[in-house]
Image (cartoon, rainbow, N blue to C red):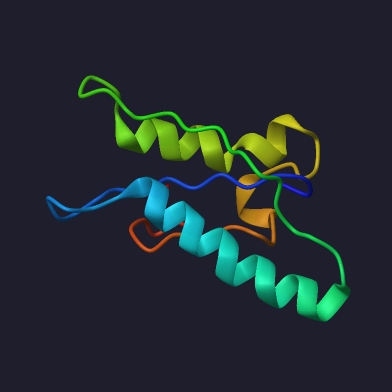
Length: 93
């Protein structure tokens, strides 16, 4: 999305720390963005939603992928240039 980012992340270890991950991600990407543009990239806060056991991860991923479609930016999520996944083959969904 042009004005925000959706991440679907999963901690794989007992000591996984989402807040530390988000902080590190925002710090590193924000540093390079500001160096290149002179502008800040991220707002201070963020919205988080921790999935409940009964929530299906694939449905949540589909919801995220369809966000640019709902906003009218593309007519199919596969046409949105700023998407990716380390877990799903997006072209088989």
